[in-house]
Length: 399
Ligand SMILES: [Zn+2]
Image (cartoon, rainbow, N blue to C red; front, side, top):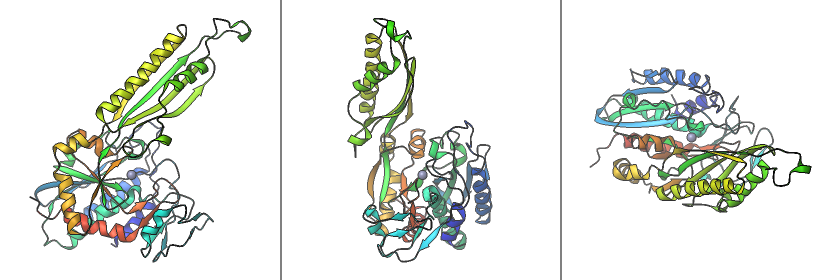
């Protein structure tokens, strides 16, 4: 089957995850895509292709003794719906303002990234949904690689260990990931944008939930008695360093408030803390804890409860111990005329947790951009190029 057609088929299946259901998969509909993928994997010779009880899809294309993993996720982001995705193809894009079927426009002045794609075919949305190239482009690239080896049984290759995961967008891709089933020496997630970028570094991440409880008394008689939870909360916020996402870029970390909800009696604050550096993240956690202690001292009759938890870790220290997957990618991309740059993800990736658990998994690009929104698009040339490169990534002997 044509690789682009395959991609178009995948994005038409609604697979949005949901961070409120508490189940795995978080939405049953992700299995609709999983079932189609199993059928296609079997047709391409992955005899053991199956879905586990959590909706993750595994399969192996047997080859030589090396075992290289390829991973992409089936769900789409929460920000915009992926119901009734209606992909539109722009042939030979010439740098014009892109006009969507629903009247929306994407102007290269606001989206200078478009200039990089002049002369290429693009797949865009109709303006009403996201496209879901994140990460169905990754899935279609992996399928394109498998199709190639199905069409060319005479070409030798590594044993290709495939896994399509659920719930990446809610940070739960690795939750029930079965490393034994995957059985790879190392792997690649294909879930990024730029095809000349390999990402093997990401934030260290903590999440904090803080409840401030005041003492409620008629304000008219509040002198030395009334403790207002809203004041406790705002005093706490004032103690945080002015390092928000707005003030930070590149390798800088931040404190980011997600929500403050409540009233003068009880107020609950949720925030995230991010830093690339292993010591840096611990220092930031310490600053939050100290700020909580200060509030406790300032309001001895109030109550403050802090819940803080590690969300994910920077994969760099794990990747550094086993640089083979990154070095191998650099070499193979180079043979295709692409100088891979090493990028740092200002966020997380399933590969970070896989790497921590022993399966080193850097992230590669898909040729799709503006993820999580209506302006998401796929560059078809880059998508096809990635299929060519990944074919060699699991083919060539290395070292
Ligand atoms: Zn993704």
